[in-house]
Image 1 (tube, helix red, strand yellow):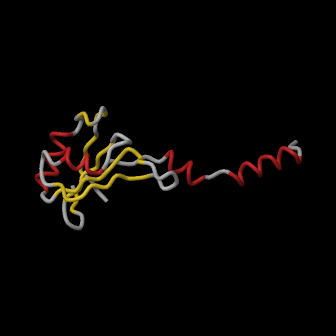
Image 2 (cartoon, helix red, strand yellow):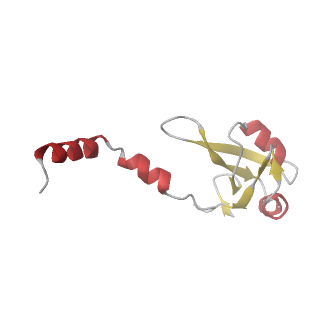
Image 3 (cartoon, rainbow, N blue to C red):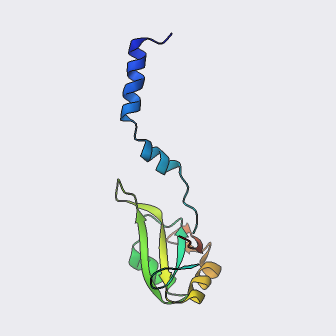
Amino acid sequence: MVSFASAARLLCRLATTDFWRIFRHNSTVRPKIVMSGSGFSIYVGNAPYQTTEQEMGDFFSSVGTVTNVRIVLDRETGRPRGFAFVEFSEQQSAERAVNELNGADFNGRQLRVNIASR
């Protein structure tokens, strides 16, 4: 039989649990070529947390013209989540990025580069 005190503790824990945070933490981000508003996007995983959009854009410009870089941030902390989307002006550039830079070392981390799908 469950005592009133243990039931009250359980209800208190349930009331203070942030289930959305647990769900987001356990959900996986699937690597995601799709044309976005003005170009072709790739997904970049395992990105260094301290990198800037400028540094990432400079790195990927070796395979083509980069039109946009978006480093994804955690909603609660505002810190980088370790992945980004890089947009190119041409599909061939996005394909080159996947073929040539997937597995490349960038600031000490091995990047995962895939075509983005939304």
